[in-house]
Image (tube, rainbow, N blue to C red; front, side, top):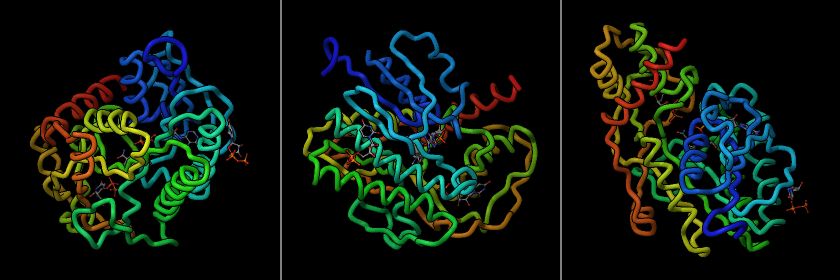
Length: 319
Ligand code: NAD
Ligand code: UDP
Ligand code: UDP
């Protein structure tokens, strides 16, 4: 441990993004020094501008596909575009970000003997045949499809984490994040929660893809960040992978109807084509997180959506 007391120097890659910026806030609240490294591909200055001038916060424009030499105690590796339109924009760069990014951050962890957490994803389960998905489920992923750059990149990153752990005794933690939403989501990244809210607030048609019966389980961002912190605090023999998400499952039709209700919108729900490889169902089995971390989500979808709608209202007001 560096410096004084329990304060650590912590690197957050992708720290100017949606989840990363909330994590930076939380770590600063806990008294740590935070180094945020981000190439600003999908990150936003707005997400971290309230931290500029904070004495324990430092921003560094950096692409994780290049080596990074810094001295830190812990690393949260979040750098990677997360929404299909962003990660499919330059799929080769997406795979490089996951794979080369993991190698560089693990190399850094090895040199400075830091503990390192990887933001993995429920997408590593692909279009699952097992429902809900426990960590032991190995997944059904198309290696050559439109989502593969993301899914396979993240799977390879998990492989690297476990090989660095076995081969170099690096202290690793792998978290499989399920769909998360909340303030600071990108308004235009095509993800369902931001799309529906923006469409409802603008009074334009709400685009329900396919028959709308496909399901997702949405976790509010504050709950997810609680999970990250708990995972990082586990004993060194706990590596995960561990699912972090909210098991309450909703169909996209139910979500659309709830957003219309909460925004008092006049928008109509219309159907649009289903994107390729769109998983039919997704729900985390969080038994492991409950048992080992004593963690479970607290924020209900309605409550979390209300807070998220408020954020998007402010964003539209400021535009
Ligand atoms: P985001 O796009 O808001 O954040 C990702 C951040 O990484 C951005 O700030 C972006 O600029 C940065 N980045 C991208 N490529 C980079 C590179 N090569 N070098 C440095 N920085 C780079 O997305 P998010 O929702 O905050 O996701 C954060 C992490 O969590 C990602 O790794 C994502 O795969 C994972 N995840 C998120 C969700 C979710 O529902 N939000 C679900 C599963 C996994
Ligand atoms: N690396 C880094 N920061 C460090 C140490 C290493 O970015 O502080 C990068 C380095 O460029 C290397 C990668 O991490 O390519 C993997 O490092 P490792 O020590 O595992 O392998 P090697 O250096 O033998 O390739
Ligand atoms: N979706 C939708 N309308 C939209 C955006 C997405 O019906 O405007 C659907 C999409 O087809 C998928 C679900 O919502 O079934 C979640 O999509 P998202 O891109 O948010 O996340 P992911 O598919 O990566 O879980």
